[in-house]
Figure (cartoon, rainbow, N blue to C red):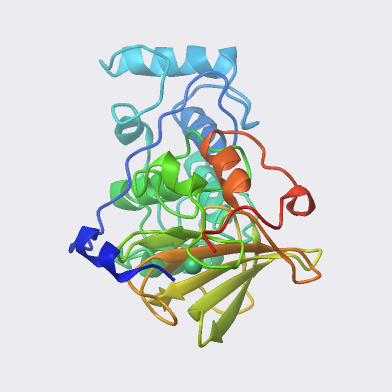
Amino acid sequence: MVTAFLVALLPATQAQALPAWPSISQGASGVDTKAAQYLLRHHGYGIAADGQFGTATRSAVISFQTAHGLTADGTIGAQTWPRLVVSVSQGSTGEAVKAAQTQLNAYGAGLSVDGQFGPATNTAVRSYQSSHGLTVDGLVGPQTWQSLLGTNGADGGGGTPSGYSLPLARSAVPRSDYAAPHYGTTPAIDLIVSYIPAYAIKSGVVDHYSSTSCGIGIRLLQPDGSRFVYCHLSARSVADGVQVAAGTRIATTGDTGNSGAPHLHVEIRTSDGVAHCPQSYLLAIYDGLTPPSFGSLPTSGCTTA
Ligand SMILES: [Zn+2]
């Protein structure tokens, strides 16, 4: 819950633009790097698609950039991605299809990365497009590529440690908001935003949860019974019981339940139900560090009351 005076500070718009293309370079690792490697293989570069952006990948990128009249800096960013991505749809085969399947799996599609764009891949693309406000046509073209690559990790694939995501786009709130005490007596955090996408902080199973105080909520269940709790949502984006990857959009923030103004309330609870202070956990993710275990987080000292 937040105090009402904050209402005046809230922006009125709900813009839903495509996320920025991620920027990856030597030293990067993860799903965006792996997709880039498959796409480079499609363009004839015989590098391994191992998800590790090493010297061989950098050399291939520089060669690709040179061949396409781009600045040959070895970084795959807003300039290089649009030339690197390849439109694929049902019936397509090959390395570019593997890139698309790799990206879709980061959102829980569960596809085998076989380079065959069949009915299962088609269904996964359409489902992704439907849940991300894109034209639902089954075509992985420039817009869907940009959404897939840019949405992953909520912040364009850069900055956060592998396997984790901020709960909101990095640009949504300043770092200091992740350090602020909770407005209340429960260890938690309130992130003051209007109606914007909320993302899975870690992989987990979406559990639809509602209460008078939480309003429309989601519990993101971990295998050991611990969970993240998201409250005051205006809408959920994922069905109950679905396993999602870190960075998957799971909801739109809102003002439901005991809430004085639109904001996202986040809790971390261990399997015994005890609420722990999420501040240091989220700050670690913000800073690109692996966060501490739930159990090591304090259970007091992070509230205003
Ligand atoms: Zn709160």
